[in-house]
Image (cartoon, rainbow, N blue to C red):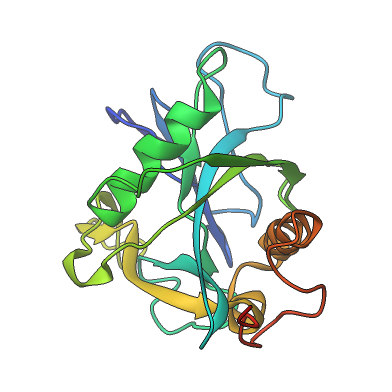
Length: 217
């Protein structure tokens, strides 16, 4: 097991027989089991990790409800497409404001601040890994042509001793609701469905809206 200090929070990656996690104080890498080896620097190894996410969406008569997702970077996700996309998010420390963390992580992963507007809380969602994501949504446009992400480093290929740098998010895309549900990590589908339900409850979209256009009034 190796421990490498890092100055910032990064996402956890679990794939095959390699597990990598980052807290605000350390990386913990394990090559022997396909489980996450995670150490809280302030104690509480049994505590669920917490992340904050910001889901930017837009509505149009032509494409209906669209959401902005990022494809996860690094060699494990490079050749994957379906179930390899994520809402921009990142871990935050106990006592921190999740909305501030969500905005910060969005800017770090996509390279620019999110659009301004009213914040729509989507609540908490527990992921298959045990992580709890607190998600907020905001309506607005975001030009993905200027997209660029922060990076992380890891040994690759495994066992080579070669440390390489990879983007947290290697591309961004506006997706219709139906496509997004097919492409996003399975544990985040419920977050997309929660957004659609709240928009329906607010009479913004019809209940059956997926890839359908928003009816004009």
